[in-house]
Image 1 (tube, each protein chain N blue to C red):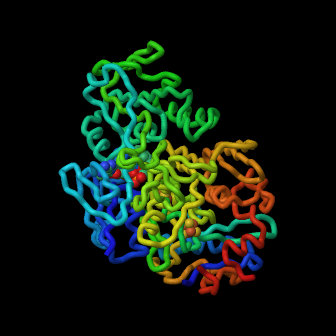
Image 2 (cartoon, chains in turn cyan, green):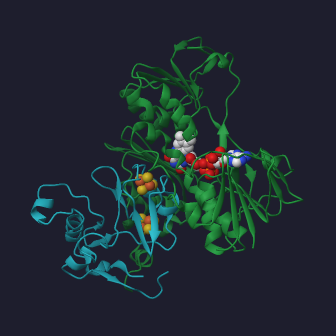
Image 3 (cartoon, rainbow over the protein chains, first blue to last red):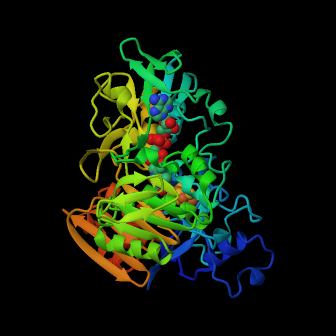
Length: 146
Length: 410
Ligand SMILES: Cc1cc2nc3c(=O)[nH]c(=O)nc-3n(C[C@H](O)[C@H](O)[C@H](O)COP(=O)(O)OP(=O)(O)OC[C@H]3O[C@@H](n4cnc5c(N)ncnc54)[C@H](O)[C@@H]3O)c2cc1C
Ligand code: SF4
Ligand code: SF4
């Protein structure tokens, strides 16, 4: 299964992936209109300090704790992709309590959102990957993946 | 073809069904469902009253769940007894069902202590089932005074659920603080203050001793007038079916890591079961939804002949009231360190070089990283744990650990 991987050494910490993610999932066509002067709620987050930075997004785990723990049955895994039905989520944050990667966070409305690999928005391929200026984020299949 | 029978139709049962089907696509599954509902998310009953979800969205699994998984469900039927030698289950209506493998996923029931005059109270409710919530909903009025007995998770969630639909809410508890099973005094005080700021009143270290139709006489001598009474004192695991046939029962039905009870061919999972708590290092009932699912899934796989063990279950709760979120996990043993900020408080418990537990109120970002340290028993000298004081993030791991964790290019 193809996943989003981050090469920490190449990450510049520029946060562009966060903006590209927020824009890709905004449903809007104009980036300025979608993001300007707004607090963004991306599904990928750059962590780190000083010279170490790296972006983190959902790993689409083999055995996802979030799916097993969601109190609303709102998270499911199908064809390798872990998705949230935002219509069912009640914002209890149990999934945040159990995700070992710290990979998901609520959106502006307090309802959970997470990386769904841009398969259903207009991008069709992860926007964080396409837009990374240093190619630190890749979307690929790796041997040894479970 | 194997015949599987599941008693109960909650989250644990859903886990059992999915666990069985993970291994065996053929066998016959019969579900005995005491409640006359499609499997629903029990914790959502307060969100339902609050208007944050509805009966459709509360369904824990899609409408075609039983069909897709080839299950026959007997709705509104109680299992009355088990014949462990004949391998049958008898229902309340006399029907007898044969099994090869049986799972007990009967959950828990409210515990109501002896209180004089309780029978005189007409508008009294439990808060455990969808049925309870629907009954309670019928009597909610904008000017009603509500007394909730029990300041635990269920009582406070009920308060939040009905808050916008009633006049005034009073919550009483024998404990000296709210949420006494998951919070210490200092943390509980923050939550209590927050609820009080919304207008909820508390009477703590005190409880109702006796009742008239619309009045409670407290042990302390106080009286509380109410229109609606909600009893959320505590719960007891439904262990009777196993206890009555000589199975090993403690606070819950005792199970091993494979979810086997002491009776061959019979498994148990969820709130009715007492499994291994790896933070505590011994068995206890972990009455939380994630555990019900994981125990159920483990039981199902084993019932179908696979080998599965649940070895790293721990208590963990994420819960919010009126916008204030808190997360707790593990056990509160060892040395406590505290981090206070404007956003809230974090308390970490460290023992023998391991994170054993935490209580976090307020800033809950990426807390799952901490939960995984407890579950995986990660030695703290292999990570930069000091960093979590300011920010919980993957920076606590070494580059090498991150590489492994995230599958980075080596
Ligand atoms: C108000 C409320 C809020 C909660 N909030 C949270 C939360 O935020 N997070 C969390 O993790 N957990 C929460 N919980 C706990 C969580 O709901 C339970 O841990 C979980 O539902 C347990 O699932 P279960 O399948 O073991 O039992 P249950 O969901 O109780 O299902 C057991 C079923 O078995 C049936 N049954 C019992 N005996 C028989 C019989 N003899 N024959 C046939 N059927 C029978 C019962 O009718 C019931 O439907 C909450 C619980 C409540 C009540
Ligand atoms: S949200 Fe976390 S637990 Fe769920 S699949 Fe993604 S990385 Fe795994
Ligand atoms: S926050 Fe939403 S998605 Fe996460 S566990 Fe709660 S209900 Fe499920």
